Length: 117
Length: 109
Image (cartoon, each protein chain N blue to C red):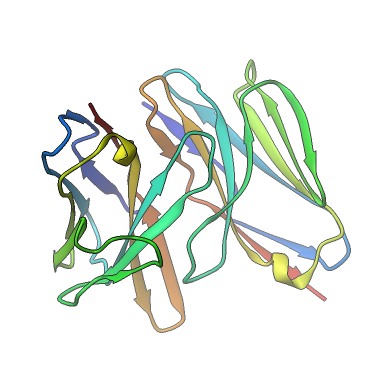
C-alpha cells in the first residue's frame, strides 16, 4: 500500500502558540486529504476534507479559523492549530485518498500527538 | 520494523458469519482498534481491545491475544450494509497508530 507520512510525530507547545502539522503522501498523488482527531480510546473524528487547490470543507463544530488547512499540492497538506489551548491536546491523523473512476484508495498517516501545556 | 497484516479481501454470504484476522508486530502495545470504513466516508470505530479476550458488541465481536500478536473481528448475521473495509490499527509504545491496509469485505446475497 501507499505510504503517508506526518511530521512531527509528536509536539508539545505552550498555550497560545500555533503548531503546524504536515501530511505527505509519499508515493501517490492524493486528490483528497482528510484530517481527523482522536481522543484516547475514542473513534476517529473527521475534522475536514480538503481537495488539492481548493478550500477545505470543515465538519460541523470544527472552527475553520482555528484549524487552518492548506492542500497546496497532490502530495502535501498542512494543518495549523492556531492559538492552541490545552483542550486541543489530541492525536491528529491525516489520511490521503486517491479517486480514479470507481477505484478508491485511502491511506492513513501515523498520527501526530499534540500536547498543549 | 512494525507491521500489521490482514487479508486484502474477503467474501461472505448475507446472514452468515465472517472472521477477519489481524496479526501485528509492533514496538510495544497499547491497544488495538478495529474500524469500519465505507468508500468515501470516514472510518467509524468498532472496537478497542487492550486486554486479552473476547469483547462482544451486538453483531460484532473482537478478540485479542497479546502473546500471539493476534486479533480478529467477528461479524455475525451479515447484512448487505456490512460490505465495507475493515481496518485494524495498533497503538505502539510511543502511542503512534500503526495501521493495517484494511480488509475489503464483500457481502453477497
